[in-house]
Length: 116
Image 1: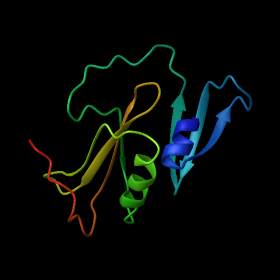
Image 2 (image 1 turned 60 degrees about the horizontal axis):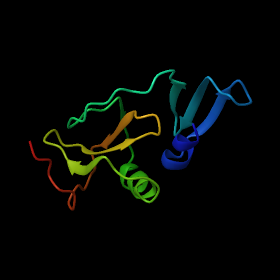
Image 3 (image 1 turned 45 degrees about the horizontal axis):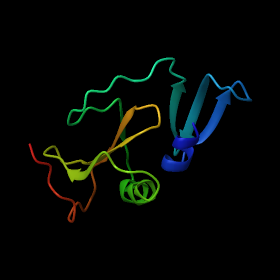
Image 4 (image 1 turned 135 degrees about the vertical axis):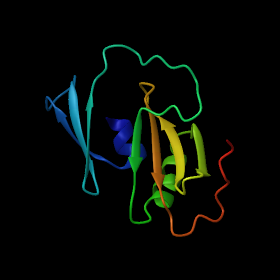
């Protein structure tokens, strides 16, 4: 929960109100993301574009979020311009869930094109 607050700027509403938490609702810019504490580690076999959560942004928010996130955690992939017109980058949360963040930007110059 703290990772999503610090890295992605969400405001958390945990349940129960004190730790240990079992569930939380994360809110930002009209979006709600609900997370449940996992009981088992996430098995991960590294693959390209192997995301668990895909967040599509609007309003030219990607560049600001990208700059904020990359100062706080390593990027797993990207940023890169995809063949379907979105700029994407991926992060991994502390439990191993991969989050892909994407947006169609008005100006995507300066972002490398994805390699197929």
